[in-house]
Length: 91
Image 1 (spheres, rainbow, N blue to C red):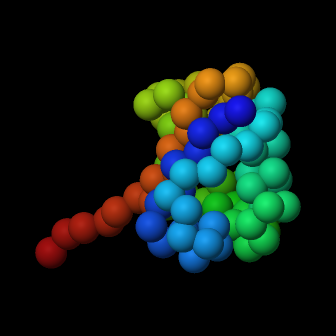
Image 2 (image 1 turned 180 degrees about the vertical axis):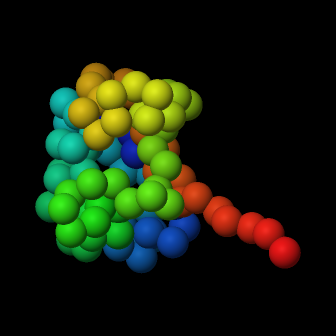
């Protein structure tokens, strides 16, 4: 199983759960599995073409998937995935 940390803004879709467990071979599989169990989550993470939204950061074992293989990053049992919405700031 893979542990997925769900950010606060998405927790209404997971019935308030901050962590869920899934079985998936890649980030793409994980998103599909999450969406099956928690409908609507994929639309919040991906755009209409299926690409990850710019403001969504995903980490596997604390490594940004942008520096790995993006949404094709492999997952294995015991991995921890964090979904982190980007926070913009400024004056």
